Image (cartoon, rainbow, N blue to C red):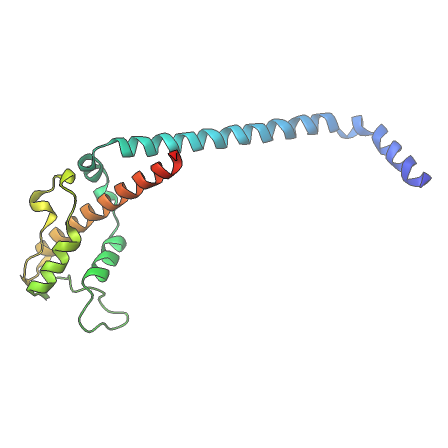
Amino acid sequence: MANGTSAAVTEAARLDEIGFPEFTCKLVTDVFDALVAANIRQTQAYVELLQAVAQSLKDYINNTKDDIGGEEILQFLAKVLPPDNPVPGQDSTKVKAGTTLNDADATALNSALTVPAAAAQPSNNQVATAGALDETKVKTICDAVAVRLAANKYDLLKEILITIIL
């Protein structure tokens, strides 16, 4: 035990040589700076959330619908209007140029595309009609899906904010 004690005393006497006070000071300072930076980032994210939810639904949709990616749109369409005879690795939705929508397809799609009146979209986002689809009609449907998805994200942001506040 005497060896352990003398080794500890010897090492403690060398603390000035190895810069222990400087190391400790830098460690505490860096940890504090990291905590402050994380708090600032968290506060900025909270402010951005508040600003997003403070917008009207119509403004939020107009500001974010272009950020909705093609993959999200395809997932939505695949869920709402999957092909009649799905083939793995092939088209995942009926909504593509060269196909035809029947009345039931158009009704199902329009039902899924409905947005709250506060979104103030033309024809309440009801863009699907029975008949053949060309590139223009597919783009119109995809744009309507982006509006619907943006409205969903707005609702989700509001729910998150309510959860945070409560």
